Amino acid sequence: MNRVVVDSSILLAVIHQEQGSEKIGPELLTRALISTVNLAEVQGKLLSWGWLAGEAWADATGSVGEIVPFTAGHAKAAGSLISATRALGLSLGDRACLALGLALNAPVYTADRSWKNLKLGIRIHVIR
Image (cartoon, rainbow, N blue to C red; front, side, top):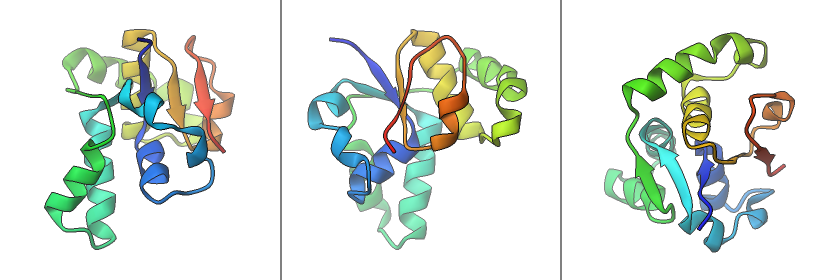
């Protein structure tokens, strides 16, 4: 099974059935990994939209294959990505996702169009 990494925008697009979410099927999500940082982003966004905490957590975690703790190594890599991503305005969550993809040498999926211009040595799939 080939692993892939998803960022928070992917889960939010799937949950809300937004444009591009049709490109993310259940098979891809079952082999998808997500950083705990990105999971926190999804949880927070759902709560801000009125979800109850338990429902938000269930929706955030229910479709991904594996939740990966944000390690010291990921933190170092995410911090180091600041110079390569500053011009695009990527957040800590974005860089945490990319750090996980780099650590695993796995393709990364996002709904954020600005990632199209990144050249980091891993494949980046933009769904919109």
